[in-house]
Image (cartoon, rainbow, N blue to C red; front, side, top):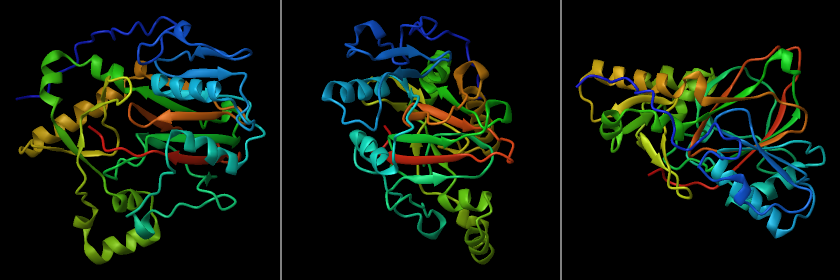
Amino acid sequence: MGVQSASGIQSPLGLNDPAVLMSGLRIETLRLPAGIEVQRTDGPCGTILRGVDLADDLPAEVISLILTLFHHSGVLVIPGQSRLTPQRQMEVTEWFGRPYNREGGGRFDDIPTVDGTLVQNVSGGSELKPHSDVQDYAIPPDVTVLHGVEVPPPSAGGCTLFANLFQAYDELDEAMKRRVERMKWKPASTLATAYAVKIPQAIEYVKQHGMGALESDVEHPVVRTHPVSGRKALWVSTFTVKMVGIDDPEENKRMVHFLKEHVTQPHLWYTHKWTPHDVIMWDNRCVNHWRQNWDHQYRRIMHRSQAGGSRPF
């Protein structure tokens, strides 16, 4: 059976309506505390929350609002967080669950910390192709929180793009939905990722053990169900290297290519142009993100933390 094209069906969630969040929840149904504003981004996913300082000891109703927006937006942008320390960022991240530890990656997956916390200081690098975080693990994190401590000007690049994977699933034709409903895929391994970005230990390991060491035993569902909204996401990305159950190698490659092309269509993406001290929380269960390259005469200092961790289903 050959790979079929998408049907072009529009998402039924009314995403052109600025009052409708990614899951279909309407903003006017939320109870907003005094002084707090919520608005959609100009893309197919994401919500902007204003009037909150995460450094403050926030009341329960505000924390509850943050969690609700996160679970229904895919991406939550909270600007102006200049008072946020790494320690406080970790506390905020723990609202979503226990801190996420990358166990099992060994020397190929060392994560540095800031001031002894589990907040990663991401200061360099270049483009990172579309992906959901830590898909090379059987149990990836639910949430990633990124604080833009120092960012290049928008004209210098360094934007982060986010894709609505609910909409990507909705726009498959019915035959393709049936075909991929129970299908699984294999990601590139942690070692393969380290090898691709030229970590010396990974290169030396592959020299000693061969390219076969790059294969992964992890399997993920092509269609992932969100545990809160119940919506289905087409959960594939750059990390997807092989489909499970398609024996013909060429057909396997065609399916991988089709799904990757489908989730990278421009209309599925929101482009975030960073300003200093933006905080972005994204849901690794239903969005992909894509870091663009930037002019490296400018520094890009980001504090990253992750929490939760659930087996995709």
